[in-house]
Length: 174
Image (cartoon, rainbow, N blue to C red; front, side):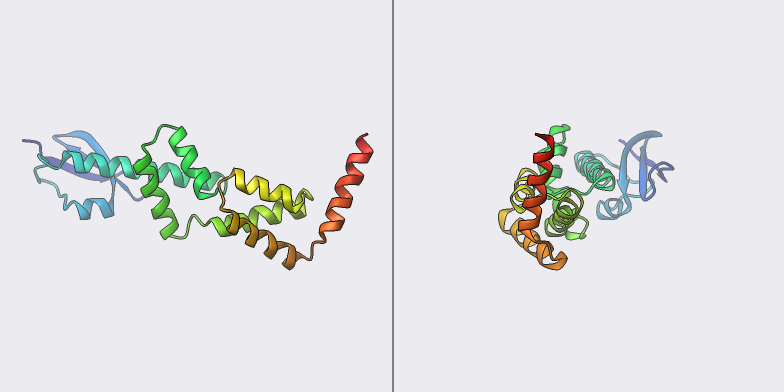
């Protein structure tokens, strides 16, 4: 019979709690998961070990996704591919992506607009080039087209001048 001996906050991860079973570290969980599983000190964990492990694994993937987003904005598909490539389970990745989208932390339309704005205004890239880059990142065609149209309209970008500048730049290198 395994019993929860302590639930203590983790110093390195605010909002996360370490679950100690029989005095040994068993899992790191969020407060939400602890409440959902109805965990408390003195409670027997026999029979719910798998649910606790699944919650801990899901939280680990979610935290990893948050860290990746803190480093750089990403499209949903790009983030999912990166997480799966790093060895995370597809089902956990899908749940983490859905949770991030529900919380408004992952939005393909906002990412596409930001990416388009930086590429068109900063790097002077053409509409087609930005469209290709967004497609490579996994942004849907209709979302990328809407973002490109919005940015070109809001910023008053003339496609002809962008193409002309690219041609001048290329001519200098020849």
